[in-house]
Length: 324
Image (cartoon, rainbow, N blue to C red; front, top):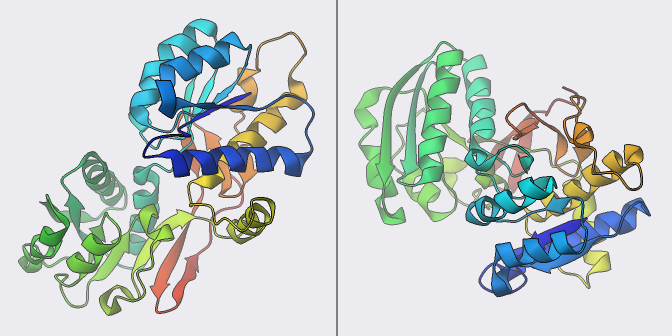
């Protein structure tokens, strides 16, 4: 099993954490079913790393991290009939033999919008960045609102963080019950200042790794994210093994991808290709981020919980499902 991540270049810290998390999973499970090797996509590119991994006889690839790298290596892995479990959150890169493990914004948006609708919100609006992530978040909100029988009364975009507040203020006359702020950090803090008084503020999975409780207007806001239940334990084991280093939130993907491989290896016969049927198991898998499974579109379907921003961090509003 190969892990393709950047160990050099601007994303080296994230890539290193993903690789270390994968090794930690091997250590925790004690699995002897396969060997794990980490290949650097930052040095000579993802294609070169994939060729090295395939040439070494790897039967499963975890990674790459970025969507463009996944697209680049997919033709190679598909010809070799080696499945890819990508760390990207871009659902558009999913294809035959290519699975997306990252946290896609559409699922988090659907979860938090559904929770808001269940508690009385009917008129929804959104303030999103003028980016692919923003577009997908707005589209996901529209679908979720329609499913819940609500109405989208407005969507505003901004090109720079400092313009987020003005974008929110442009929605002031729309009379919305709830507004989605599909960003994190400074843009969300600024946008919140322009939100209509009394409206419920909603966020995405990006909020899970942000400290937003210092912004008074965001206290009480809801967001959907992977369950926090196992995260603290994972961080503790990671720090103990890697000299006190604190992993970024995305590192859990490296750990959970290996858990998937370990479980699938139970039915992996020596000399045969990796069993794709194990990846498609409809019962799903359990990991640091809760339960997940791959749908017919090869995108990870996740069970998100809804949390509320508090001055000291967050509190649970609605727990994540424990089974599909």
